[in-house]
Image (cartoon, rainbow, N blue to C red):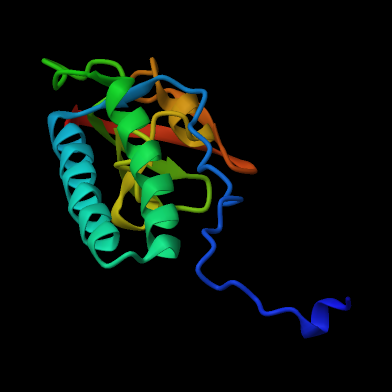
Amino acid sequence: MSRAFVKEDTSEVVSDLPERPVSEHPNYVTAEGLAQIESEVARLRQELAAATASADRSAQAKIGSDLRYWTARRANAELVPPPADCKTVRFGCAVTILREDGRKQTFKILGEDEADPAKGTLSHAAPLARSLLGKSLQESIQAGHGKATIVFIAPG
């Protein structure tokens, strides 16, 4: 019989949802970043309970996928204390660079899940952050297609 004449079962769960990939980089986090992960896990558990109670199998699959991701991120989180000093660029430091074109930019180097470049935070795994880590004031780094000089480093 043609599929055109078979009733579709819309209650079937979409079990082929791809899992969110977990980064291969160390999961360094600040205390705030760890709190954000904990909050996300708690929120997703509540949403999963609500989706289960309403028998929304599609929502259960989506929320379950997100919950597995955040639970894995929490399980491999490595809490990094704030730096005591920032004589060199380290995780948790705020760094100001001066680009060749005259632009000054300031970034705080944080964990992958905390990073938002539009808000001035970079993941420690980002190429620019990797160029900065371990460097000191007045050192030159590769920044995109050009060079930049580190003009300020401070605890974040």
